[in-house]
Image (cartoon, rainbow over all chains, first blue to last red; front, side, top):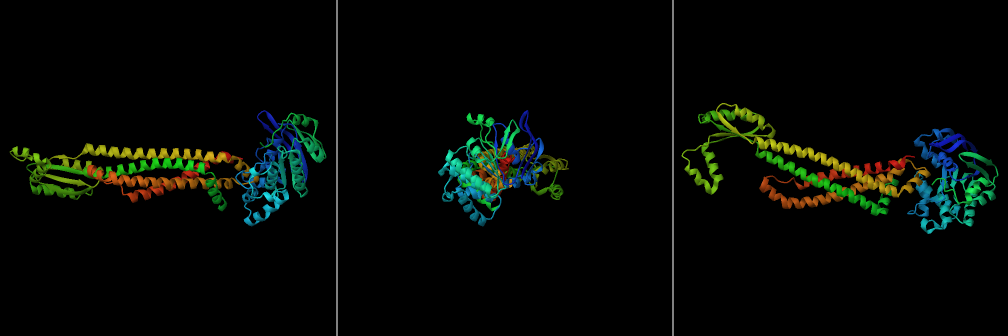
Amino acid sequence: MIIYKNVTKTYGTNIGLEDVSITIKKKDFVFLVGPSGAGKSTFIKLMLKEIEPNSGGITLNGVEVTSLSNRGIPKLRRSIGVVFQDFRLLPQKTVFENVSFAMEIIHMNPRSVRRQVPQVLSLVGVSSKAYKYPGELSAGEQQRVAIARAIVNNPLVLIADEPTGNLDPDTAWEIMHLLEQINLRGTTVVMVTHAKDIVDKMGKRVIAIDRGRVVRDEKSGVYGAEEEETSRIGGGGSALL
Amino acid sequence: MIYSIKQAAKQFARNRAMSMASVFSITAILLVLGLFFILVVNINNIAESAKQDFNVIRLYLLDSTDYGMAEDIMGKFSIMPEVRQVSYLSEEKAMEDFRVKFGDKAYILDTLRENPLPNSVIVEVSRLEDAGRVAAKARAMEGVEDISYYKETVDRLLKVTNFIQIGAMAVILALVIISVVVVSNTIKLTVLAREREISIMKYVGATNWFIRGPFLGEGIFIGIVSAGVSAGLIALVYHKLVDVVGPNLLIILSAGMVPERFLISNLAIVFIALGVSIGACGSIVSMRRFLDT
């Protein structure tokens, strides 16, 4: 469960988020939409404790994120998987190593690594590419590997920051189905996107942010007119870039 | 721990060019440091042995002072703890030494009607620093007409060696600081090249020490390799120097060079300690910025 309570974050005179209160339940699938600079990136950075809010509180699965000490940050981040628009795979590591690396970081024993990595690679459909390097894969395959890395430690929450932004429509849909599957397995998914057709067709919860405020929160929403404007002119980069 | 060591070795191998650049710069600095070090150690050594030649005070006795009185004077000096040796030089022996010194021009001395040289007592002190005090006592002694010792030379020598020691410390300290800066900058480049990897590690939940580990290992490894290479090169250079300069030094200054094995084994220990610290400090300093959040 993710709870934002009266969260405000400002950067000098610019507003990042203003008095935002949101509750995302366990196993929810949420689209976070809004024009560039609306506050989506701030929303995610606050959850990962990359930045501190000026006021308000954030709780993630019972852990008070805002009062967490620096030493507690790694543990918090282990409960959150992150997928980026640009995949962010390590080019000098093989597919297997890119995924096992996430497990080694949390000191998993080598036997578990050898067992779990093939399982998760099979789940995302890139088993046959285990010993290839990211440069030898298609964009869709790279995103699958990135998803495998994000979920290999069974995080409670998966943040997908424009995961389909660099993909053709068919591949984008494949990735969406994969995210839906992961959600069905019990992982909460928060996806930042500008892809109107995906949001409209999926019929999931939509939280729209504009100028730091939540302007719309619908249980089964669509991509709104306010976001469409930005989307059409090609605005909006990856929230975490 | 094992992960860090494995990763450090892998990183070193994968980033061969960058690692070699780091090794090259640390080696260059350690080489300068090493050359300076052997220079200073040897200058000190020469100064020390030169001091041995100037630790003699000569007491010229009055004509009225007979051998018995001279023995009394010698007795007073030989009980002093700072005196190493006391000897008597008769006027005849002094003239003989003079003749030897003049060599084939000794006939000049034949024109002298009588021996103008006095009898003398020669006092040798253990430490050059005590020569002044012993000389003052000698001057005040009854039966002594005059004394001679190399006061100015002694003072100058002491000044020069002090200056060299202080100067050497300052230069070595400056070189160490410079090397930490250079190394931290070189490692910063390798960290910068892996900024993306670090950011991913942070997102996946790696602790700061887990991220730092391989870089620290890499820094230390670079330090050790550089220390080994530079100590080896210095050993080669010193070996040649001992061969070529050593015998000449013995002739000109009657001082030998510091023994090769002693100097190089100490230098190697200092270099490895220095290399490890420079590598470790460099990597910690250069990573600080990347581990803020």
